[in-house]
Length: 101
Image (cartoon, rainbow, N blue to C red; front, side, top):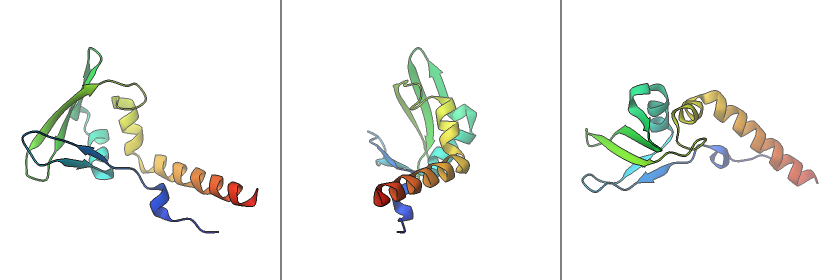
């Protein structure tokens, strides 16, 4: 049985911004954040991200810091294609195990 690549592609996140159109944070934005160290600042239990917006502005977004979710190290890991390659292989293996059980 074959699986669809869309089932194992990175998820995108919506960012609702009060002064600019809402922003969709997809794989390319995660790559930017993961490969541009100055785009993410952590302090006092908060994380601030400077995210490029399609309207030609940087959006500054702050949220609570969750280690393993939105910290610099985790976002850098998400930005590497090898992470998604491993993730994709693991999902395919799980689907095949499910269908052969």
